[in-house]
Length: 238
Image 1 (cartoon, rainbow, N blue to C red):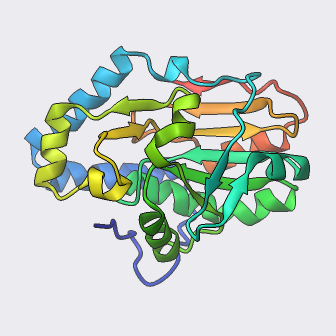
Image 2 (image 1 turned 90 degrees about the vertical axis):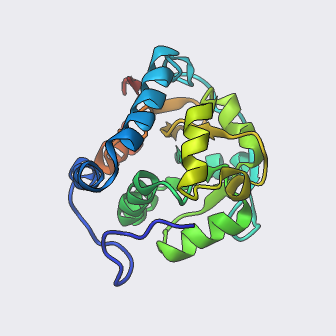
């Protein structure tokens, strides 16, 4: 169970804006995915938007919940170790089965060195098992740790967690997206995609969360948040 990159010859070097890469993916979905399948996903997103889940997530000025999570290699990563070194970019994704998560992570990997050069750290978080996280990190040559958030415990503290609808569960089962296997539990819970920039003191400087999994912040937008000298960045949620 994996999603192949648009370029399979090696690590992605697609320097286009993320919105253009996503537009290409959406065009392919329109062409090749049956309309009734597309409609299931559209209804799921509409339902989450109606619940205004993104409006209830951490915002600029809020304090980061402390965390201690294993990465894709089983190494423990702790917020108390990261924050004294500099700002932290924290991205929550659904999993390696999601093409939009893959594209976002590859795009973030391309600027990870620049972010780290400013003294900041980049980490991604997903509810996948350690084995699935390892496969994703290895396949897409990610330049930062992919943390394992078992049972979405950290994502829940950020207000990001939702339960996949029965209709979407049935669709995932038909299309071999086995979330219980990928995540190692039977909850059928996922985080909505979100990215945060955290200052040394634990305050959120930048927040981008969206119920629509096809809408993610541009890496350069995140880089601006990393370089900001104060907390004037506005939360980006829709």
